[in-house]
Length: 176
Image (tube, rainbow, N blue to C red; front, side, top):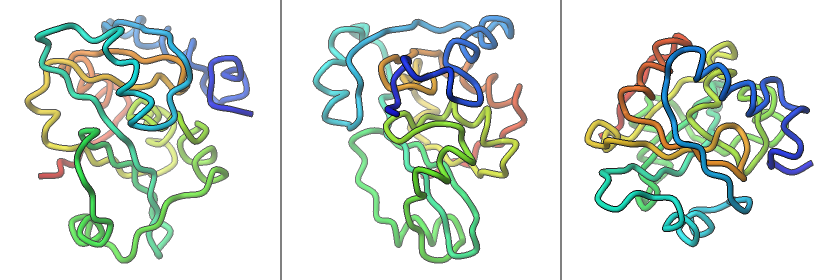
């Protein structure tokens, strides 16, 4: 199965259920539907269709990583930021990092490859995934991210994004 909304009912929490929870919690978002986006390049090709001119937005990329001690991490970075996994491992205080498998991604974050998103911490919080976010998010007005599927993007204010993390009991660790 792919990571689109056509298969969302096979996820532990569907995209529709997540969006309903955001609404019920009083967290605002703008929802955009589009072709499936699997890479930063895919995103850059269509983001002009829904980004608001002049908006101080953070467009992101996400890495699901695991260390040798079997600790799981979700790392959210500004989409054009270069990342050195060795340096990141030192920053996280762990050993060598590797990308988590598709099976582990589903087990720990409840999503498929191509839909990795900070919003997946709704599942990751219960699985012990540690969340790291680029400090650039502190300056953003709006954060664009997938709501557990890769053919939808939500734009949420930074304040509502942080309120989401508070609501699900996730501590945001900031990466300089």
